[in-house]
Structure formats: C-alpha cells, structure tokens
Length: 100
Image (tube, rainbow, N blue to C red; front, side, top):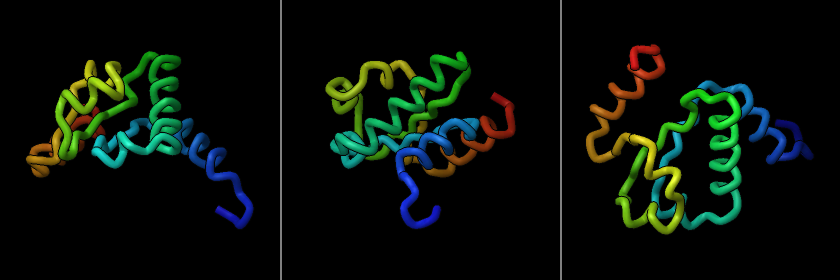
C-alpha cells in the first residue's frame, strides 16, 4: 500500500481475490463495530454471490451465546476452535489442499 491509499478499497480488493476468509471470532472481533463488521459483511456477500464456501469461522475464547447476539448466520457455519490449535491447523490445511 502506498501513502494515501484507501484501506477500504484495499481490503475489498483482497477479499475479491482470496479463496477463503479465515475469520478469527473473538470478543474483540465481536465488539469492533467498524472494520470487523464491514469485512465480515464483505466475505458473507462474496459467499452468497459465488455460492461457494468462503467464510471459515475460527472461534477464539467465545461460545454460542456470544454469537447469538452478533450473527445467527455465523452460528450456522461449522467453525474451528483455537482451543486445539494442532487440530485446527490440520483442518485448515485439508481445506486449503481441497480435501474437504
């Protein structure tokens, strides 16, 4: 990025070009009303428009009750959990290697 570049435009460009969006869902993420919600909305839109699996939720220190107040849509997505980081890494690798 160069001085003066738009963060929003660069984020949108990255989302358009990526295959997956690993979204780390933490209390900090859920409390960020500005950037986090905008990025999640863009990833969700991409997933709905392309009808492909794009959003990969990763739960970090939260549970279903935290998401109930934030996004019911995310509750419908099977997510990984950072409580078992090795298993999570293996799941992500299988997904990226197109074995899931």
